[in-house]
Structure formats: structure tokens, C-alpha cells
Image (cartoon, rainbow, N blue to C red; front, side, top):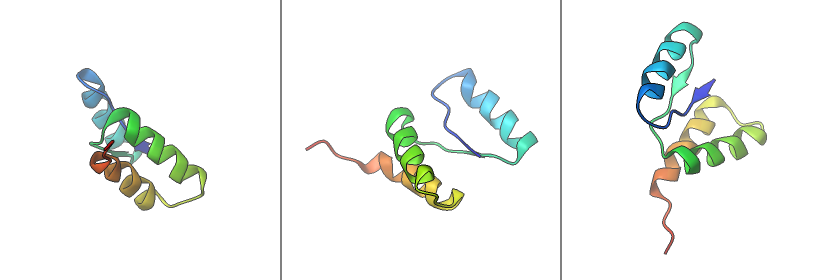
Length: 63
């Protein structure tokens, strides 16, 4: 399970859930990371690949 918190208390909550359920908390842009992760997961990729896609969203450029 990959958790992508936005800001504030959701980060703390995500970390608590991750400890209890062996999930991974991703420090990625919320919207871009979530979309990249969802598309990659939908294609049947591994958790490692899903996390990598979400992390790559940090480098997306508009121009």
C-alpha cells in the first residue's frame, strides 16, 4: 500500500497507518504523485515501480 498525504496532520496519520499496516508513505506532490501512482498501479506494476512513478512526478515541468 502506498500512502500520499497532503499536508499537516495527514502526514502524521499516514505514518501511523504505515507502521501498523506495512505501508509506504511517499513524500511526493499530492496531485501529480497520486495520478502517476494510480496510472502505474492500474497497469499492474509493483509497489516499487508505483513509488518510483510518484517520486518522478516531482520533476515534471510544464514548459
